[in-house]
Image (cartoon, rainbow over all chains, first blue to last red; front, side):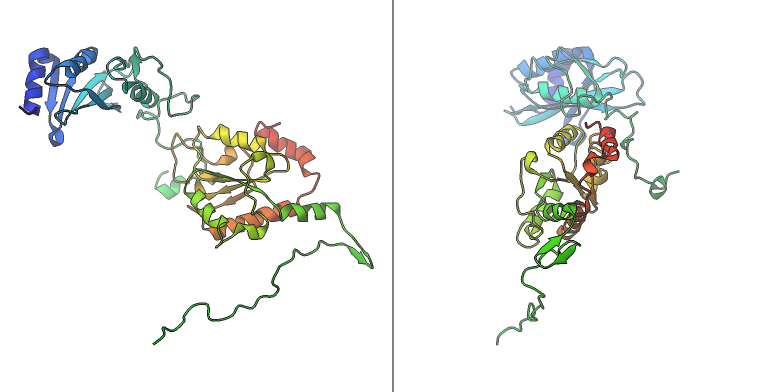
Amino acid sequence: MALTNGTIRQQLTEKFGEEIYDWSEPYGMLTFTSHKDLNLKVLQHLFDDPTLQFRFLTDICAVHYPEKKGAELAVVYHLHNLVENIRIRFKVFTDVNKPDVFSATALYASANWMERETYDFYGVNFVGHPNLVRILNADEMDYFPMRKEYPLEEQTRVDKDDEMFGRD
Amino acid sequence: MARPVQYNITNKHVEAPIALASAPEGLTGEGFFATKLSDVVGLARKNSIWPLPFATSCCGIEFMALMASHYDLARFGSERVSFSPRQCDLLMVMGTIAKKMAPIVKQVYLQMAEPRWVLAMGACASSGGIFDSYAVLQGIDQIIPVDVYVPGCPPRPEAVLDGFIKVQDLVGKENLRRRNSERYKELMNSYGIQ
C-alpha cells in the first residue's frame, strides 16, 4: 500500500491526537504543526515508525512572523521518505524572546549544519546542539540578520541617495 | 562568386612598430643626459607593474579577457601576473567582497611590499554595488586605501585598461618620498595599518 497524505495524517493523529494541529496541504505537501516541546517526539516517531520512515531531513529553516505575539519564530522541518518518495513539512512555533527549541542532531546528523545556519540567521537557540555558533556570517556579527526588525539595506552604505528611491 | 570582403580591408597607419616610452625632462648634451632620479624610477616602475588579481566574481571574468591576447594587458608592462602578494605592486580587487572575506583582502594588502597600489574594479569592490545587504562589504575602501576606482558592472576590459593607465600615471608621477611622509602615515593609521 502506497503511503499517502491521508494515511500519514491518520497515523499521526492516532499517536499524538490533538497535539498535532493546523493540518493543510499546500500544493499537495502535507503540512502540520505541533507544540515546540514535542518536536523531538514527533520527529522520532516519523523516523522510527515502519510505515512512515521519514529518514531524510531535507531542510531546517525558520520564518519570522513579527505580528504573531508569543509565536514569532517558526522552525520548519522538511522531511522526505525516500522509500515511498513522499515529503512532509513540520512546523513548531516559539517565542522570539525565548527561542529555545530542542535540537534534532541526535536523530539526523544533517541537522548539525542546518541548525547552525538557522541560529546564524534567526537566533533560534537549539538546545542540545553540540556546537551552536555562527556558520555563514562573520563571527563578530551581533544580530540575526533575517529577523524583520533589522533593515534590509546595509546601514553603512553612504552612496545611495534616498531621493532616487522615492524616499524622503 | 566570392563573397565581398567587409572587414579589415583598409591598412591602418602605424606610426612606429614599437612605441617607446618618452624620456623624462632633463638636460641633454654630447654624451650625457641628466634628469631627476624620481623620474627615472617612476618610468621604470610604471612600465613594469606586477598585478595581483584578487578576483571573486564576474569582474574576474572580464579580467581574464583583459589578460588574454585580444586586450592584452601585457602591452603595458604587466604580463607578469603574480599570485604572491610579496612580489606585487598593484592589488586589483575585482568582485564582491563579503564581510567575511574582508580580513583576507586586508591581509593580502599587508603582505604586499611598499610601494603598493590598489585598483578597485567594478561596482561591488568600489561601493558594494547591488549587494546592499548585511553580508557584503560596502566598498573595499572601508578596509584598505584605494588608488583608482573603475566603475561598471562589470566594467569592459577597455575600462579596466583606462583604470590601469591611470594607475600608471600615479606610479610614474609619485614622489619617492611620498611613502615616508606624515600624510601617508596618517592615511595608513586611519586604516589601522602601521
